[in-house]
Image 1 (cartoon, rainbow, N blue to C red):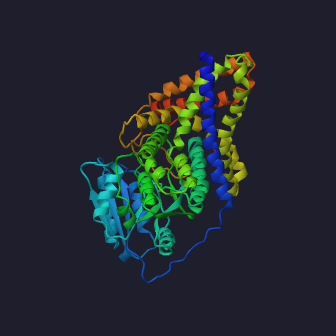
Image 2: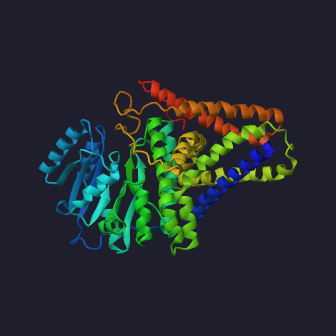
Image 3: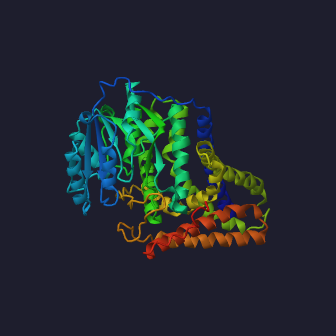
Amino acid sequence: MALEIVAAVYLLASLGLFLYGINSVYLLILHLRRRSPGNPLLLDQGALPMVTVQLPIFNERHVGERLLKAVCLFDYPRDRMEIQVLDDSTDDTREIMIQAVQQARQDGLDVKYLHREKRTGYKGGALREGLDVAKGEFIAVFDADFVPPPEFLRRIIPVFQTDARVGMVQARWGHLNEGYSLLTRVQSVGIDGHFLVEQPARSDGGLFLNFNGTGGVWRRKTILDAGNWSSDTLTEDLDLSYRAQLKGWQFRYVAEVVCPGELPAHIIAFKNQQRRWAKGSIQTAIKLYPSVFSSRLSKRIKLEAFFHLTGYMVHPLMMVLALTAPILALVPSGYLSHFHQLFVLLAFTSLAGFIGPTSLYSYSQVHCYADGWSRLKRLPALMMGGTGLTVSNTVAIIEALAGNKGSFIRTPKHGIVGKEGGWAGKGYVPEKDPWAYVELGLGAYTLFGVVAALFSGDYGIIPFLLLYVTGFTYVGTLSLLHSRTPGGVTCDLEPGML
């Protein structure tokens, strides 16, 4: 009876992954059907709107000044652009940014420096307080680790001018340090899947999409109409996005405008980022999906919004598979005779759950890069890395479901561009991650499952178990090395191998 219960739990988790995989296929199909995007021009060169550019910063001594200098180079009339440096820093970032602001003012730019002694509401609170004194009709937001191009506003503002119902326009994220390490290369593929397939598919398909926290512009009226920034979730950007679209505002995505950012080069910083996104998205789902479900939106939009808001639930589902598969691998093939055929069938649905996202990520590389076919070599590492995050993200989701709000842990950056620079010796290195030992333990546990499957003859489950073995072992080992090795050992492949 106990084995039958384990098998049933495994089957349900496989079915869940299959459904999320189908949603990835659906978004891929929408993208394949999308029309060629236009490239609107400014409608009235003589009446450009006032724009406030908000730069929320917290302890970013390595990248804050770089961001401000990039914004100061915007090709937009200076008398119609205000810059707000929203600095909650508690270290020498304050002195660096004050000096940079003074220099910008000497150059004739309207730059305000706003510092808060208490970080109330974290990033959302800073944006809200800045909005109270902002002069702009439109509000652009950039995180400290991004470097927007000079033409950013001139290419984004026209989208608002074509339709008064457009409340937010999101640009595509690029990568400043994609080639730095295996970790950053893996992240680049994951981000490309979102920005090159999912966001345009949702935008063109009339689905809800989200402001990604940076590299986008809001209509001020939209923010206020939706209830302003809130800090009751860890993803204030996703929260406000859904509240605004529930109010009837339309969002647009412009893939042709690329705003490059720095990818986390430290594994624990990356895990903290993913943990915050996972927890915040589930918090937002709990808060807002009842309103989505009870709205007059079509069933298609409601269903995709569910998968969108709960996308990180794939990690608890994968955790269930990781825990149950080695147990089932001990059972000789055919032992659970009345479960066996269904077990085989839903084992393939689990495979489909992996194939859906993999197809989406593969398409993002091949369709959008000249060397796309060569980039496909990164996909096994992407699957390995995503699997390795299962422990960390599952813990975050359990906390969200339990009502544990948590605190906003920023993702520190170190001014890495290309393969130059590094995080060692620059401070802001995250503390040790105790979950690394759990990850290594699960790596050993799933390896035991591989051995058990070899003896029981259940060879079909071995590829899945090997994915867990490599994923847990890589992420756990890298977490320990980045915690203990100040010299910067990264446990990466040699440059150019992926």
